[in-house]
Length: 178
Image (cartoon, rainbow, N blue to C red; front, side):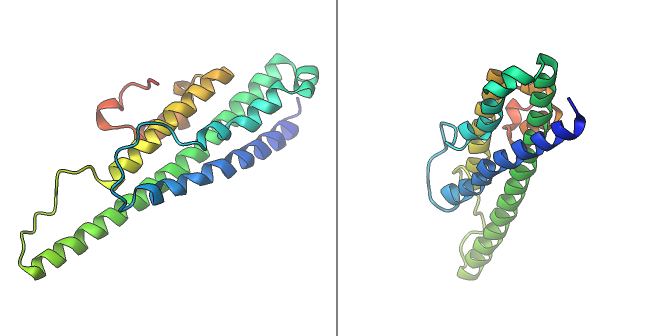
């Protein structure tokens, strides 16, 4: 297949996926200063991220006009680029969450010092950022399962490994398993 055509199709698929990935921003609102418990399941947006790719690959035209090699090339290209964008958005979300949490902690410590209270603000609750990271971790596990359902081994995609390192709890970073 012509590289220009493949690139155009992949670009369109990536943009469709990013529409769903933009829902990542809602994760912060869900956990920032809400006292919600740790998440236990993936977010609903995850199931839609790869849907356009799946629809294309299983469509009649793809079955008719694309060779298995062309379909595989399209699949790997799209999966890699979508995952790369996922990583960018998740890393940005975590960075902002950590900065916000750090600022809030400094404000609380300053208020406690002015009030003459103990400056030990580090209660033993799970932080909002930890909850956000856990939600993202659950989400990328489901995303990895969805990639596997399409025939892509998530651990073989460098951006997925980077995404995993970005959101996985420290005790789960060495082994990609979902």
